[in-house]
Image (tube, rainbow over the protein chains, first blue to last red):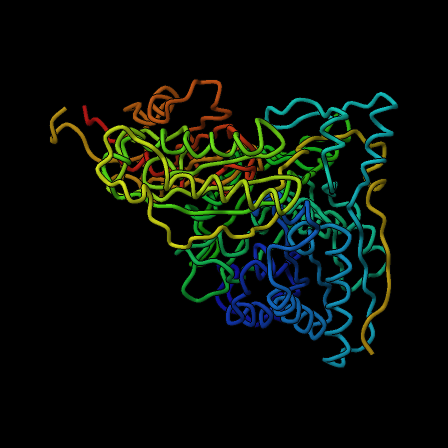
Length: 469
Length: 110
């Protein structure tokens, strides 16, 4: 594996003269299985650490609100197994942040349990297993608000109100580098993190070894999505990143992939509103002066990020609250006249629900595929619907029984809608299923806020246990 | 505008995508293969703040960021969601199909 311009050397030779090198197998552990081929190539390059993130708020508010996972247990176990066995064989630390999609306490406990189980199964010699929690009770937030703290809204949200807090079921705080550094200091060989900034997982060991904060956080930012910073496009493949006092270099492990100036620069835009700034607990980095260079065939080099410390320590909070139980129905339309009057059909069905349940105490939502189902109010072609429509109906209410009936009336009554000049008088819509289906309860994001803390560790208790035989 | 005086954005850009940027925003990336295409589209105004607002039928206040990102040869803009990701009625939890209308943009050549 070549990582500089002086031609191929063995991994052991490289190790003598280099910075910190971390292998990242997956941008969201468990969400889709890690590709093991490039991961093994990464292990063969003898990294100093194996690390990745396992969380995201991309999968919507249901996993956090209901304290579940968006990823199946079997996939989480598969990915952890590859990392654990590989890292323990090399005798290098392994770190996972934002356990189980959400980083709640139950997800941390699940991952700690998986690590212990796998360590036993594989007969791995005894090692130190560190973990930290990120969950925050409503009570803790309420007390701070009562003491006069403002929980400030992000991304245009208003500041947190008591009502919005009470509508919340579960809250996680987003950790910075601090609990990872603390656990490394305590001698942990394997670390399972609660909710944390993606970049903190990689920045923590770099900062702990004395690399500049600006490069360390940038290093974390470029590493956190694994092969998403490489081309051609292909997820779930491994990359190795190296940080030195001067630069960050990132190399694709899959032989078909390369990290290029274009792919690494493009990744700095990915899923963030502004490509120049990355915020985390303790400050942000300014990437506007970054210089991207091609280092070798498969490696890009970056210099020039700047670290801006925060004037005040503010931790990001994520929270989700239950809206109600939910049922889903579907109906479809082929009659062009009915398509042109689909809003009247929906209004008819809504009126039937109102007649049965009144104006409030439930929610009823219609998504019209074939017209504006995907873009909603952003759809420029809303007045040019397709030749057929599918209408997805969601009924949400405090109990399953009411949700089912709301959804059933809201779906079936479209069949009976009365349009003045309709030719077809034997049923206004087509049903794939003449039933409504139970779905996950409806949740919503109630918190996307920040809260002041005095100490970056105060919300993130750390623990160390042992695993292996 | 005649065919000779414009070119489809899809013929000039190599990547046109949309994705969540947190739970309250969706971000759009249009990435070009070379500086010539990047400069052409940038200068044409086909992806300016105003053009994007017209295309999606939104007021300027819905746009949180609009950036010409030279290191990535990209034009990038971000909009506030009407409701947070995954709320009842949000049809695109990941925000990953919101780029559709960008594919129909014609870029004037003069």
